[in-house]
Length: 444
Image (tube, rainbow, N blue to C red; front, side, top):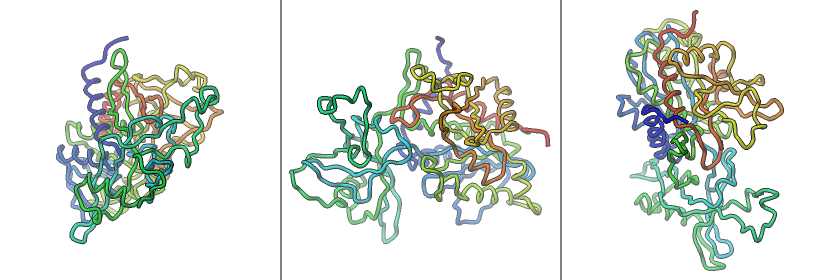
């Protein structure tokens, strides 16, 4: 077992810093905006007129949880197409219901709804809190404010084994309505509460605003334990939300590290709501990316049909987590496609088009990896198991451009605490930066 390079450790630690600053998709966009501003990017608003310049660096957001950033190329975008990398900012978990607070058997509890497909059992008996966004009034206008209660105030407590003797043999079975509402405090038996005021008072104290200024909120449960590097040789990263903040971080870092003005316009997107199907205003199925593409491709003195011509020259890397082989469940993996953490980027394939990869897009990504001497792996699901999907096929359908689905290998996907390889971050960044900087991807 060899040690990790300085570059690998540096990229891994920066990934942890990014994840630890991003307990929700909302906070991930805040952190991304901060890093973009530090790199000289200018914020644009969808409702304004845009004046885009060659070599300019811009970003725009939607719904506070989706973001698109791009570096204009030295050549017109309609001539070169757009180099797009797409990822998603959300992670599976739990959202607090509107009238969430209630009392039962002497406890104050919060009613919660499952978001996406979390490994629910992994959230039990952990130190939890809440984070999200709060809508408050300010001189009659509504403003969004981030909130993040950093101390543990919630716990989803398991039933003691003395009352559930067969749990280790039959597994932990949790009813989503009855068994996962967290405990928040002790109350007097029979006490009734105003559920709205309980949560508003917590937010009021945290934000230092009067409770009557709070109009609404979007809150989710978060784990209070920060991510960290682990393993005997520091080869692992242990953290929540690796799926898919690891790829958000990789594309952002690659965009920031472009060492010269790119010939082709380089673009990254962080979509929200991938874990629940992407069919939202901020999701991958929305027209958000298409609208931005059109404005970029038709900017300046563009000719007729610039949008369609630019699309025909564009390419997308859809970046999301990939399943590393699990040593305790080897038979759940296709024997010829058991990918390893710290083994390099993974190209994901599916004959059922659950991933958008095809022969052309595979060739382009493999060539990028070869250009920078980074190993590449291939993943395909066992034929007799249902396969997940990504925003890759959605992007291919919306824009009609070639897409390759890739990711870095990880274990415990959708757990409150996931695991990935420390060295994989630096390798993926290297390949994505090459994608942005390479003058020509294929022969036309």
